Length: 443
Ligand code: LLP
Image 1 (cartoon, rainbow, N blue to C red):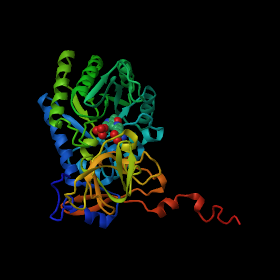
Image 2 (tube, helix red, strand yellow; image 1 turned 135 degrees about the vertical axis):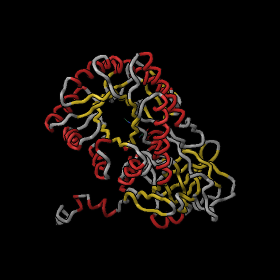
Image 3 (cartoon, rainbow, N blue to C red; image 1 turned 120 degrees about the horizontal axis):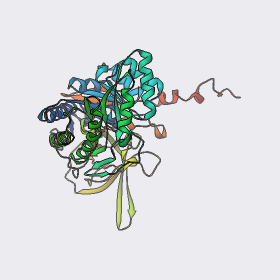
Image 4 (cartoon, rainbow, N blue to C red; image 1 turned 90 degrees about the vertical axis):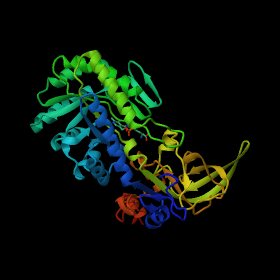
């Protein structure tokens, strides 16, 4: 939500509901998702890629990458907006299916899918299984043969391009666990084609996350198209999947290019690569996650303690909130940057530099490393941390026995829980050592 979205009392408004009433109704910490915003982003990204694909005479499937945040409601929003769904575990597959996603419009990833997961995918009739290693070719082929199905598959390659934010790195081989080396893709593609139970759709690659422009995708597309062209000599290769990774603004310093421009840049590179290698332009596929759900989420916290800590050359003000790395691990894990603002009121007090910390027993438990908040920030104030819709709930933990907060969707002034929060009693109920039979009668 922008700072403009405040009511007359100065309370931050999200999806037509003010933050104070949300906190009163659902408690804090609280994940809030603006449904209209998430839907609008999904629709805009789908439109951008549709237009870019059409401009080079092809079509596109846009998969929502569920790892960013998957729940029944979110599956329905994105499929309503015309997207397919990308999952990477049996658990994510189960959510997508239970929410009613069309199996034919599910893509199934994973570098170490179990045999049971592969069977579930095949039996469900997923539209594509992404083969991530040589070993998986026969695993998927056998599962499909046993089920009497012809399973459409993609082959994930490691293009040697790794991109993040405005830079990309291109090497012959990237040292990471996903995909097969590009220089083995022709051989492995042929091996996939040798199985009657597999239908080879084409190559896949994913070059990274939080990427701000088209350059890395373009480089990767050019590399893939060389191999795609080789594979096309034996039989047409219908598609090319370039993964996800489109970046968002976490702070005002982040300025990703508009998705329309990125989509056009990628399409231009694909068209050019196809000309160079003299192959027809394939169907395209993409897998954005963060760029759809990230900016639509905001986390609400209540300020607890405030502590001035003397440091070299001054003092740092630690503002501690009632959540932290259990609901947002990204700052601790990746040094991610966020912003924060007081959500419950406006203030004209002079800004003070603060660090927003969590409540966990760990000094790395920081939510926002550096932020200017009104100098009169006080215990009881509600803090909003925007852009927490992606990879926050999905990476949440119970560290220090802290229950995970609920996720609430707001739309047109109406709030509803889309994922229940946990209670302390639920956490304790999983502890077998606390069961009556477990030795408490040891006398
Ligand atoms: N497709 C594949 C094969 C992926 O591995 C990923 C993300 C995506 C699509 C979606 O990428 P997105 O559009 O959301 O950037 N936990 C990290 C991000 C890990 C991304 C893993 N793969 C974070 O919080 O930044």
